Length: 414
Image (cartoon, rainbow, N blue to C red; front, side):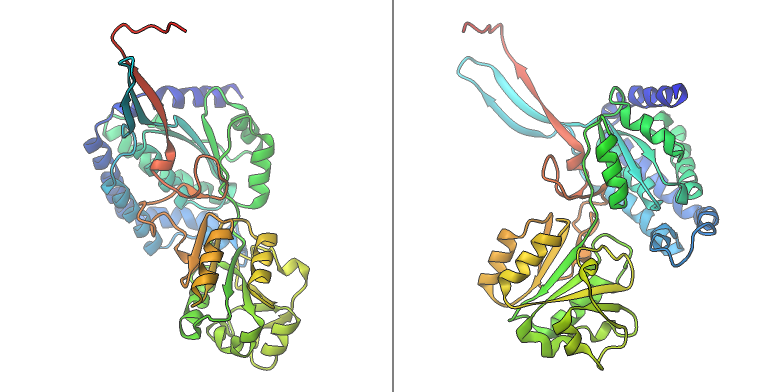
């Protein structure tokens, strides 16, 4: 325990230097790391295969864990994207002079030390470092045992670049994947300013229940798309296919298609691009519409709604009207990403107004809930809560602010 706390203390001390590093140097370090990762693709893939060998390839986490050459290049490119963005700290949010002559300035500042608890997602190691480093924060990383060798590989490259640039490697620390160590981290409120869990609902619930440190939740994604009475079939079939099959293991993948009953005759065509790939769990009305026209078809039960499948599975719910669709989403939504396909401006406006989610889509795929796609470079995670940050958490969301007050001898008299 003492060793872990001593490590956390080193990170906190090292964090104080970050805000003093020139922006040009920050960017050059990120670019150097990007180049090194591209040079070390073979090494990273080799280490990643050690992790993959310990996981069943049928496990939904397998896809998240796997690092291919293209995925590693994408990680390197995200570093370049982050390097191209403006640093978020030191921005003046507000400035004014009071009647007594006091000059007030509200300025952005780093959060300090950020603890990230995550599972089988080795790309998070690099994403978190890049965003924390660019936003002036140090980071404590607690990865899952499934990605241990992959995480160690990435951290070794990060530390190499930091040392080469005379920056303390203590600004980023990978804690062991021992579950007992997690309890120590979650209690270390004297060293860590905020905890962000990324992973299953079980992990998020555990962190929320056991942390003495403020928690920003990046929740599970139980994602719906509602095909309205006026929805355009030609675009809808491609949207549904993309939202479901682009990458099934991510939190913005489609879980439940909701369809207006007047469009049930279009349902076989609507999901035709999914056939022979996606297993459908359909309610009574949609099952009747698909029977004999879709191969991987099952009757749905209650557990098939409100489930984050993370696989080639999807449920279908039939509704009588727009408000039933909204009611269903409100009941089962994890408040991550929700979508409507409609040509009815009234329903579109109502949907975007009353649906309580971090990201609400109109006539497009939920696959875009991603920091890179939003032009944010990368992301720490998708926040599903309402305090501090919501949606993709990138550079600006990793800053808070402080007030600077300048005077000339003023004293308060009342």
